[in-house]
Length: 101
Image 1: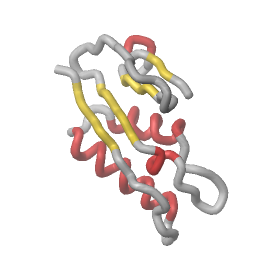
Image 2: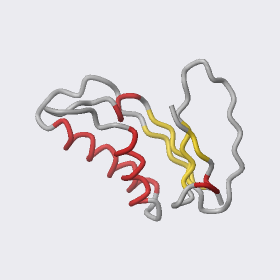
Image 3: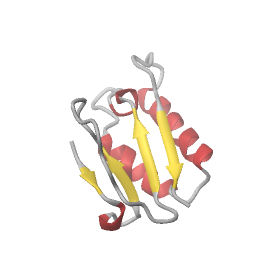
Image 4: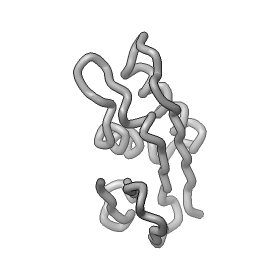
């Protein structure tokens, strides 16, 4: 699991990957920072060689960070669908996005 505050991120992106036992996380956000929460159905789908993965998701969000939130969500879900191809999605794909103002 990894976490880094927006102030230490090159794209001012707050990402917190939390183990299930973690209950409270606090982070100070600046205007324009993104909050991203997602289910394991986003990072764990596999293609023929590997999982979609957290690094790939973070890179995708960093590339799209200035787009409208709905567009970012669509890009993520489409990328996961493209990743698994014709295989059945084995889990839910849940993405929650918010932008600090």
